[in-house]
Image 1 (tube, helix red, strand yellow):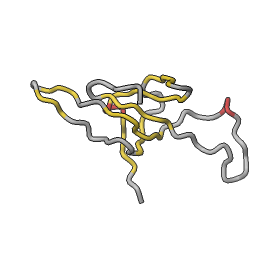
Image 2 (cartoon, one colour):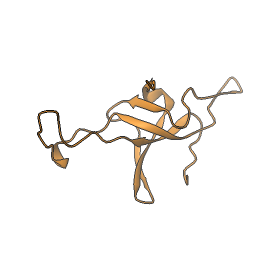
Image 3 (cartoon, rainbow, N blue to C red):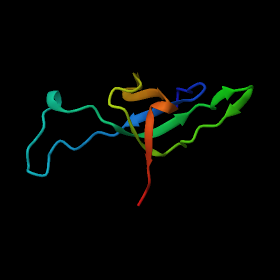
Image 4 (tube, rainbow, N blue to C red):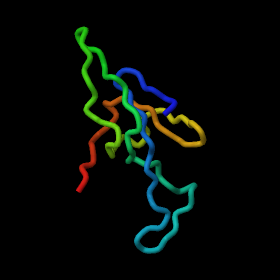
Length: 96
């Protein structure tokens, strides 16, 4: 990975939803909603509090839920990523 986030920031690869809904309706690109689910690609070392580093709760490979308009979009080698603070992450999706 060419991006190394600082402090409590994480790099997330958004997971796109399917283009076809259950009823067989195909959703065009212009009508799609922004994804709110993604995979953590890189994590920062954690934020500093009272002179000590507090590690992040998320780990590489975690599948997460985040706010619809959270983070900053960046493109690296043709792949789109989001860089966001850990506080913008709502939940970690547990593997079944």
